[in-house]
Image 1 (cartoon, one colour):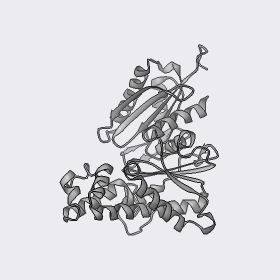
Image 2 (tube, rainbow, N blue to C red):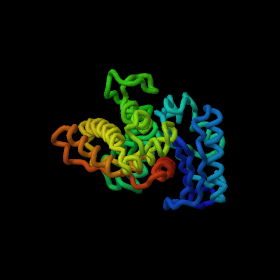
Image 3 (cartoon, helix red, strand yellow):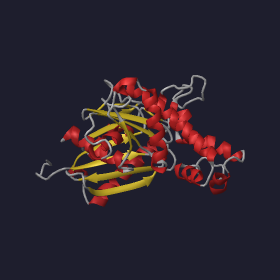
Image 4 (cartoon, rainbow, N blue to C red):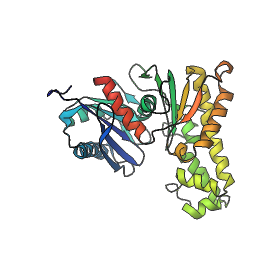
Length: 326
């Protein structure tokens, strides 16, 4: 309860590759306010932090609330996090390092803040409200600019002693592969992220093997996004389908190895690639995961597309704040 006896509201914030999204929910997790801003690429850390604060203020204004009416803020950030300090360790796809995000936001809004990896909170959102409802162990894999992973086990986000974990995008699958932003070579992200797929698609278009894609969006990687890839496949660019399938197979094999370790009952696939091509990704990842996992575990899990879309991260963040502070 708030100091005046009223029920608290819960604010969830999610930072994506192209947008910042903040939403406020009541105790039944019905939305009462929101604010969405473009990320403008990835700003330097200080400018990005100010934009995060501005987005949260916008959601409060939209809801007609003050921060004193919040029970807490949950923040999802695309990086490994020091969870004890609320500090991001190193955001390889953002270029930020060592920011004390929790303290910055607690000082600004004078309320409790919990910071977690964005995919962890997306999986928690799907566990509470979406495709993984009722799961004992749910794994989430969210391919986008990178590839994020998360796990909810018996209602809690799986984590290390001090930091977030489940960095599936940085599992090495090709020791002689491309350099990853994390400093290693051949990580899953370099082989199967949306950016990796788009790079291969651009090469195919340049060679004249994907005429529909080239006509629609040209060779600019920024324009070869999930929807453009899906439309190119629909229009007959078979080489694009082959590129996407190979990436999905690699994600499936990595996921199958996680099945052997954690034996989940539900695997949730999320992000723009999945939203644009759900049947392709779900079927290929399911098949490869079952072929890769240890034999006794192969029929113990199901693979579903995420149900909540953009809401997974913000609803998960708000719900996790309520779990931590209510």
